[in-house]
Length: 120
Image (cartoon, rainbow, N blue to C red; front, side, top):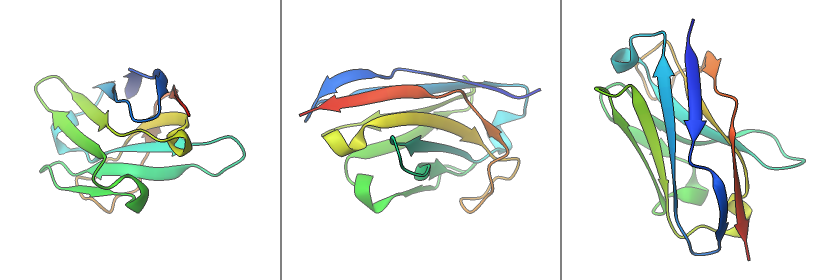
């Protein structure tokens, strides 16, 4: 059974930084594409960033240049470094796993989410 456990969320002022982590278990992590999604109150969940098994990345336009997704296959962990945070980045951030290695890959497993709140 795949388990994804997020950590690192919190309250930060605009312009600040946070680093989210997602520890994965129950799958061969190195062959999975991994992603970060977020959902703001009253809005649909949206893709923030995705990383392929080979390390290729893709980002939502709203976070390009500010957020960086990375992975450590030895630790079965994916990270999201968030810099220059804005109030509109506020939401619940979810880690997700795809059974496929590609950037364009449907996600099949989800973490429980970690809250990020950016104050103005």
